[in-house]
Amino acid sequence: MQMISPSREHARLITQLSAISHLSEHDKSVLAGLPFRIKTVAKQTDIISEGERPTESCFVLEGLLCRYKLLGRAKRQILSFHLAGDLPDLQSLHLECMDHSLGALTPARIALVPHEELRRVCMAEPSFAAVLARHAAIDGSIFREWIGNIGRRDGLSRVAHLFCEFYVRMRVLGLASDGALSLPLTQAELGDATGLSPVHMNRVMQQLRAAGLIASRGHIHTVRDWDELRRVGEFNAGYLHLKTAPPNLAL
Amino acid sequence: MQMISPSREHARLITQLSAISHLSEHDKSVLAGLPFRIKTVAKQTDIISEGERPTESCFVLEGLLCRYKLLGRAKRQILSFHLAGDLPDLQSLHLECMDHSLGALTPARIALVPHEELRRVCMAEPSFAAVLARHAAIDGSIFREWIGNIGRRDGLSRVAHLFCEFYVRMRVLGLASDGALSLPLTQAELGDATGLSPVHMNRVMQQLRAAGLIASRGHIHTVRDWDELRRVGEFNAGYLHLKTAPPNLAL
DNA sequence: CGTGTTATTGACCAACATCAAACTTAGTGG
DNA sequence: CCACTAAGTTTGATGTTGGTCAATAACACG
Image 1 (spheres, chains in turn green, orange, red, purple):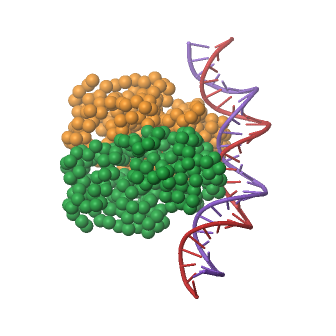
Image 2 (cartoon, each protein chain N blue to C red; image 1 turned 45 degrees about the vertical axis):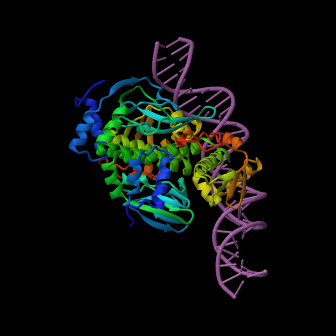
Image 3 (cartoon, chains in turn cyan, purple, green, orange; image 1 turned 120 degrees about the horizontal axis):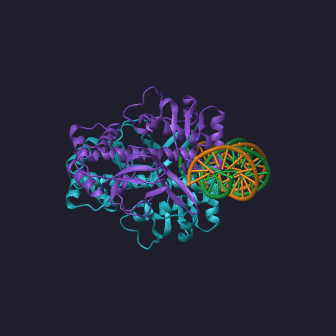
């Protein structure tokens, strides 16, 4: 357990939260004082599983995580993806029991902050609580967008929309230079996120490639025609509630 | 604008929040001090629309509300339903711009509380902020459940699940004596919530009736076989994070 | 008693799931 | 460096679910 030093990890947390909220100097020093422990997580393993009662929340330093639910007989639904800088289980601070699982899709490095400590700081520093509340609110907004995406769009649009979301979120993080996204996801996993079977997911990917919207080599996917991808996915980035748009990108 | 009196409306708010959080006497007196104004809303009208920047949040006193998004060419997705006692747009306290709309499906009576005031109280009373945060976290949990429901279940299960959710939530409110739910929703609206076309929604309802799970007379739907409905909808109430289960109900 | 909304039905078609097999790729150990 | 293997992708064939269109029946309301 490390203490007060404004470590590289703290700096990362501060940068990330700055992207969605205005942080005062005081807020920053509060953040810099949060204790945490670092954990590395192997690919395809759970950080927390449905039904558990975690006592820490997780901050993603590296890797790709997802939240998911297992439904009857081998059906999986991925609920969200989480990149470096995310706080994927803030809700566990307020809900005793996990209603879903959080797992690493790639090898990952995370920082774990005790709930006890977060609660103490929220009580002592209401403006810190407000920053977390805004983060949680955006989390909710993304869920709403996914409900609409899965409920009312066909496969092609759904997948286009998902790639748009990845593109914008990764650009904000500086992880999408020249439209190239490194997404170490199998097509089956992309299907679990969009509610499509692996086979159909494959066919949709082929459509996207044939239409010149996306090019894929291995797990590097390149956005070839942003405007058209956006149109097909009916994508509007408003729901991400970004404070600042990524440079050179029509949203 | 009414002031401090612990009015009937305040009492309602306190009762409702007690169902999900433990409230101290102090919390209750803080709640009782919130100013609000009452508004009646006609059937099928918006309380707030996507893109707007509300300055108040809404507490439902009477009626049935829903949050929804309009997607390209006349596609609508309902994101959540809200009964008396709900706070359906808490997120607007933290997100300037509405990413969805909030509308009344039936004539409704709501109380509007200024954001300014909520923010002031959250800053002054962190334990109040925590109660709201828990409410928002449950809101998010229900969205996650819907993503799984719409993404990975067929029509019959989806609709069964939705009725299970209504049943449990309304029972908690005492609105479901002997399994009868008053849901003044058209089948098209139920379809908008489950991602089904009106025609298919109709056929699913007929299946549910034929299987003896639900009986419908007008807008009164009666749960006829709870265990089987629950099984078909793969329903587990954990995601509602209720403090106390409704009486005589296997969840 | 008309008029508009909602529920229901049938016919037909598109989207997507499932199954099974072949093919490609990346990784592993000799 | 080359088999060998396991995982992931791709393909074809086939069946199911659910969407669309259009018409009819049942209601609700003034």
